[in-house]
Length: 228
Image: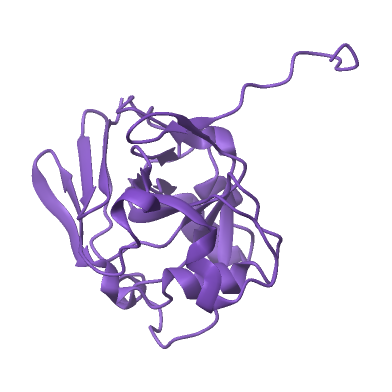
């Protein structure tokens, strides 16, 4: 350890329902995985190969902690998502065996600086600064698959200040969780500790300081944060 020129950063970790902590290695996010959200963003919902962007591991916000309103934006949006926690890595994973690689699931929020994203899209530039900023991934406790199974359908919903903003069903994902894992593992070797945020349904909208966001996914769990 004395070879480090300064102390290594702490490992980001998410509480596991029932005890323990899940160390976060990387966060992959699937874009445009619900047809109605694709339409509301002005896109074509025809099924195409999934694409991915990333967030840093230390973007995670846990245990209901507050989410600071980020700098460089005036249009911060919520995106409610099912989060898949990888427990066993691999490359070229067969979709038929993809579920064997999952440790558990959680409810999460892909916070987005929408104005920065729109500008990046228009200029043909990467989305990194619109998606991968500090505190951009509030995530609830991880429910082990050994306890809850593998949800392929069920309510996914987000309220802001008690009013429903997003409400859909996991069954409406364009790419299923096994398909997503199989596809992503052909591009990178997945490892234990990786998270996959599986896309958001329609209803994304702006939030402001003071707003309380509460999301839930049937059979999985919840996520809560306040914008400060």
